[in-house]
Image 1 (cartoon, rainbow over the protein chains, first blue to last red):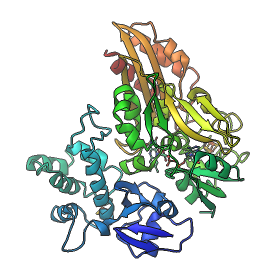
Image 2: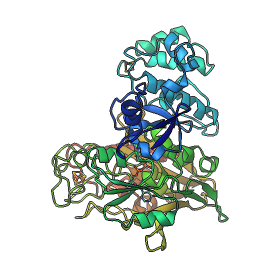
Image 3: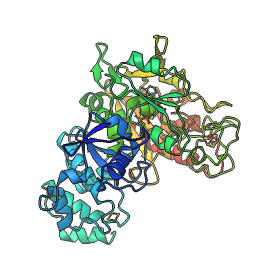
Amino acid sequence: MHFTINGRSYEADIDVRTSLLDLCREHLELTGSKKGCDHGQCGACTMLVNGRRVNSCLTLAVMHQDDEIVTIEGLGQVGNLHPLQDAFVRHDGYQCGYCTPGQICSAVGMLDEVKKGWPSHVTGDLHDAELSDAEISERMSGNICRCAAYPNIVDAIREVAGMGDRDPVLKTAAEIGA
Amino acid sequence: MKTFQYARADSAETAVQEAIAQGAKFIAGGTNLLDLMKLQVETPEKLVDITRLPLGEIEQREDGGLTIGALVPNSDLAADRRVIDGYEVLSRALLAGASGQLRNKATTAGNLLQRTRCYYFYDTASPCNKREPGSGCGAIGGFNRILAVLGTSESCIASHPSDMAVAMRALDATIVTLKSDGDRRRIAIGDFYRLPGNTPHIETALEPGELITAIELPAPVEGAKHLYRKVRDRASYAFALVSVAGVVKMDGDTIASAALAFGGLGTMPWRDAGVEAALVGQPATTATFEAAADALLADARGYGSNDFKIPLARRTLIASLRDLTGR
Ligand SMILES: Cc1cc2nc3c(=O)[nH]c(=O)nc-3n(C[C@H](O)[C@H](O)[C@H](O)COP(=O)(O)OP(=O)(O)OC[C@H]3O[C@@H](n4cnc5c(N)ncnc54)[C@H](O)[C@@H]3O)c2cc1C
Ligand code: SF4
Ligand code: FES
Ligand code: FES
């Protein structure tokens, strides 16, 4: 089977049961994408397929032979980081880092969805989607972080979305759960 | 996962031909089917990949309604301007379900056909009449907090998990199909889902190998207010314990028309003409809302840990009706 991942061509001889995630991790040495649950519940495996964020654990590799796939490795590399990778580092948007590749791929897809004007569950007027902290939390809810680095993940996304830093007083209040 | 034969269909006609094979299943977004195949709850012998079929468009019909292709992803459907303008309840229901990633992959037809989240259905070591007809029901007398209180039977009390299908039911959607003999059918959503009775493994009116090609919505109700209210354990990314989809039109203080459907409560996306009859032509008062809740819950039955859904449904319906009628 033939695949296009991060702009590169790959051939792989795989079982039809192989998920897109296992194709990358087990057959192509692209181990950046992580497996948390393997059931679509955690988001650690998030990749971009034709520019859209999806859970790569819940789709078969065989179904994606004509698609453009981007993993965390394709977003940026050391010395040439994607703005979100850079912002996650500077804002400490992680602790153990296991969920981070999925968080970053998801955030890239999410910001693109906002650009297209897609609303979310917390959007008031569905015609008018505008990013806010509540919007970021809702739109990123498919990415679980067991280390609960959420406040800093939101900060990193805010920066790249051009929303500026949060009010430091508000930030402290949020962090103590008030 | 059990192995299977894989076939990619390039037209609806070849897809239904491929699906004649014993043990064949269509795969669309795969977000429900693969989840269940990994656990060997589903063990299809053949997967017919329909994702390349030209069923991904939303079209406005001359009668003012919409035709939604079976493969339109949930996220695209929720964000479509025609849906937001005419069928806000559908956008809201979709956006209340799953996550951004899942909605990008999940399709309209796949969402209608997603299977219950009953724990015993998922656990192949437990008895379950839906998974293995005749094996018994682990949930009756077991952990049934998330399961149904309406439409249950002695064989099965599984709740239907979809949010989207609840809105579709309130909107009187019609399911358009293609059968392997080439016949096309149009099935009203009210006739699409089956009560469990003593055959809980048969969930819909679809025949084996029958392909959903589209879902049709009638023209929008002019001047109606839409609402989808979902009560769940977490604020996001959780299935409904109770949900209400409503489309209500007022004439002054009187309720002129009402379409209400319910999620989390029934063995299928639930709608009850008695609820609407209790509302239409009545003043928008608490007494009217209570009467509607009485009609909805007259036959409700709890199974222990899901008893709480009955008072929760009453309160959620009344709160929804207050919003819908501007009271
Ligand atoms: C973690 C998680 C959380 C979720 N939360 C929610 C939630 O809160 N609310 C909610 O509503 N849903 C939720 N879902 C379920 C999700 O909405 C469904 O998995 C999805 O809609 C299924 O669509 P699909 O295209 O992926 O279907 P598939 O998995 O591809 O197919 C599902 C079934 O439909 C059949 N099928 C598909 N297309 C056709 C067709 N055209 N004709 C005939 N048969 C067809 C398949 O054979 C299969 O039996 C959640 C799922 C996950 C994994
Ligand atoms: S409620 Fe239905 S799905 Fe759940 S165990 Fe009983 S028979 Fe199976
Ligand atoms: S590994 Fe895919 S969602 Fe958890
Ligand atoms: S950083 Fe550890 S799970 Fe998110």
